[in-house]
Image (cartoon, rainbow, N blue to C red):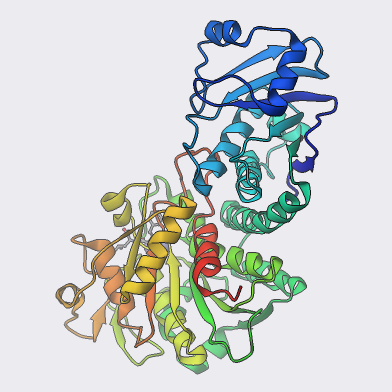
Length: 497
Ligand code: BES
Ligand code: MN
Ligand code: ZN
């Protein structure tokens, strides 16, 4: 969907604009270009700030309407907190989000922002721009009456000292924000519109960016022995697809990184059908696949110097006369037999074959899968952290650090042979659910059975990817969680400089 926000840069001399924004440090008055603007108004800053209860804390704001001597309808004064406070990149993304919230709340359509504080480096201003865009996003494709502010559009001009460097940083960071928004759009699409084939077609569009896209259909997967994934798909009228996306931005000898996503386009639970309340949320059960697709979009857009593979398993989990049953035994591509005890524990069945296939074919440097895998992860961690499970301490700590840097935070959970006991089956090698205790861990332990020596991490994003509590940078239902996190991981640790 076209974004209705436009972000530009300009020199530090603001021209006529709707809303002019200046930032003020806690306990201080306007400085630099902001001081010049303020002086033109002829107003006493201390008096106005005191009357507005403005101290300069982050989130503090007051406005002057139709200010004298300034060619703007409104002067919006925003607090930036104590000097030296909130210098992390994530804090600047939030600052951008908060600014968009203020502008949209005031139904502004045009704004200029003075960014000449010493702290406003190109990288940080790029975060602010990303925050503006991510906060402005909404999914209203199917609404006749769009929300007012979105329909009118918003143009923001960032007035900065070093335009060239800032433009470059913004373009680079914008690639990531666009990937996050692609993931959100895919997740929001209703399940009648975005089925397996439609999702695959969206992935095919990445070829325009130089991504190689391959699709395995049911016949090809049958031949490979992917009966675990196919078992989930067999109750649906929609055919399954395994989509393989390859971005070759590195040297040809470089071992690729691999990202694998759960793409259940709708999870009814199958024969073990879910209760009706909230079942509509299960259109988002492809959040892992959406994040992987969004990430591939980012890497290709910014021409990342890395080789990366994205693999997504696209299926629909439906009850029908052809659906798999509790009691069925499936043989996965690895040869492992799986007793189905609950057809609603389907994500792990999809990933079992997708993970095996990925490590077998690509021998990747590492393999990271993302999945809206268990409701239990929200019981354990709430909405503030996704669950991280890994067989590799180094990969786990890099992921954790990337989470802190982007605000897409992870919390490591245990794995261990003791949990294998809970998924032992009477009739097959393993069963697909261990029941309620340690529900997220047994799901991860199940996945581990399909991973060999390769460093691997599983991110359970069920409680952070959808039905997200609103934040400074997201007011929509789907967050796009994982795109910024994994792009940061690639940038910081795996990309040639
Ligand atoms: N897709 C669900 C998990 C989920 C729940 C995602 C809520 C997003 C929000 C998954 O396939 C599922 O149904 N898991 C079961 C596992 C159980 C049957 C062992 C669950 O969490 O109840
Ligand atoms: Mn399920
Ligand atoms: Zn599911």
